[in-house]
Structures are given as C-alpha cells and as structure tokens.
Picture 1 (spheres, rainbow, N blue to C red):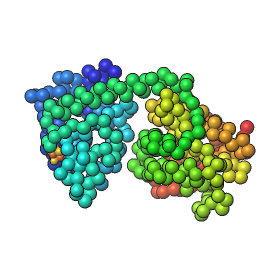
Picture 2 (cartoon, rainbow, N blue to C red):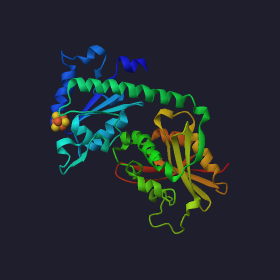
Picture 3 (cartoon, rainbow, N blue to C red):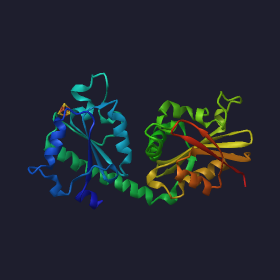
Picture 4 (cartoon, rainbow, N blue to C red):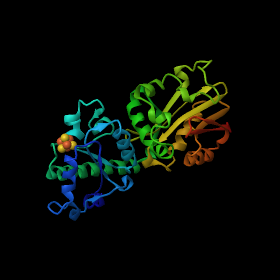
Length: 322
Ligand code: SF4
C-alpha cells in the first residue's frame, strides 16, 4: 500500500466539462501546487492508474468512454468526481443529453465540491482517495488470503445486483476484444438478470434454435451458482438441463481472482448439479482465447460456430459426462 500513498498514479478524463475544473486540475501540476513533487503522477494510460479523476457531466458520448476507462484500471481503484458537474451534472443537469454525474455510469468514491473545484479541494480529494484505496487494498488482500475458504453456493435473486456488477467487470476484457457493449452480457440489465433466475435467457438457448423454446424450462431447472468468500461474491455461473444435455452459461470470475481455480470449481459444481445430463455444452467468442483454453482444459471440445454479429462469432463447445 505504501507505493500508492507515496506515488498515486492518476488518470484524468473530461466528460464534458466547461474546462473550468480541468484548468484547476492542471493548476495542481503547475509550480504553485506541484503535486508531482509529492509523487503524484498524471498518466495517460488507465492500466497504469490507481485513481480515476472525472470532471464534467456525463453525456451520451462520454458515458461509454468513462465505463471503458474505469474497467481498464486495475483493482483496487478509486474514482474521484471533481466539481459540481461530475457530482450531479451541475448547471448542465437539465440538458437533453446529460445523464447526470459520474456516478450515473460508474461507482464514485470521493466527490470534490466546487464550481470550479479549487486546487486545494482537488488535492484534498486525492488524499481522501488514498484512504479509500488503502481500505480497498486491505479488503482485496484479505479476500486473496482467504481463497481456501471460497464457498460455492446457490445464488438467490437478492444477489442479482452484486452479480450484475461482477459480470460487467469480468466481461470488460471481452469489451477490449470485441468492443464496448458488443456482447449481450455487457448489455444485460438488472431486471433481465433477475429474470435469469426463473427463465432461460435468449442467448442461453441451444445452438441453432432461433424461436421460442418448444419445451419451457421451469424455474426449478435453472441452477445459478455463486462463489463467495468473506461474504463477497467473486464468481458465478448459471445453467439448465434440456433433454440429455446441460447448458452452462456466463461463467464469470472477478479479474483479481483469475487463475486461482474459481472458474474450474464453479463449472465442476454446476456439472454435478445435473446428475442426469449425459452431455455438457458451453460457448464463448472465437477471439476469447483465454476462455477457449480454459474450457479445453476442463475437457470441452469445439463442435460448432455461429455468427452472432459482424464482430462476434460464437464457438460452441461440448463434452460427454465421464
Ligand atoms: S463544475 Fe463548474 S467549472 Fe467545473 S465543469 Fe462544471 S460548470 Fe465548469
């Protein structure tokens, strides 16, 4: 944690500011305040940043950019909304294309007041952000040290908001491959995810089926699992059985916990939840080489492909029960 406190790296994005707050952010770097002498680095690469500084209100053009930058910051990360516009939309809140402050698209940890926000207030916000960063880092370390205590449990509809947030985070690496919002999992709403507990999502239908399901899958046949450690959900998967086959869908694990066997445990437990199934099926995008390799290690083999969109081709994989 000391490396954050002594040299926090910050990325700044102007969501649609009048430039007033941006000038004040720049003032923090000029000789009068000179935050670089304290180790603060203004980086242009979100993958190098610990703190995401947002100025200005969010509009239709800046919303996907904010989401994209946010998801590229490594965990743990902190968001600081600078100025009234980034907090609430400010004087632009009623404009036709403004959705509000930064928290209308991403979670915000620290709000810096002012119009424009003063440099002293911005520096104070960054100091507060360091405290939040330290807390998050301690939580992540505690979770990482407790991975031997991960429990695989049935998810409940109450878990939907947490699972949806995890899903958006877990699928961000796919967004970098296929583009922001190009996959159904990235676009899914909370109501749609809540409905996944009681019905088969459209894209969970078996390959080649384009109409309504001829044989409804009842709520009891859908199994929704979550991986929990210290009360926090760090992974999930859902699936259902149809005929002799079980269909596994949307395997997600928080990126901080990749390559630690969580995905393997979720898949194995879900397969065991369908003792009557003779065959298991799963799919992913053709360019998702990590997922393809992971599923191959779990015994799945490609058997079919289907074009979902110009950018996305699904690869369907299956394996027989051993
Ligand atoms: S808070 Fe004030 S100074 Fe800052 S971007 Fe909005 S209108 Fe401009």
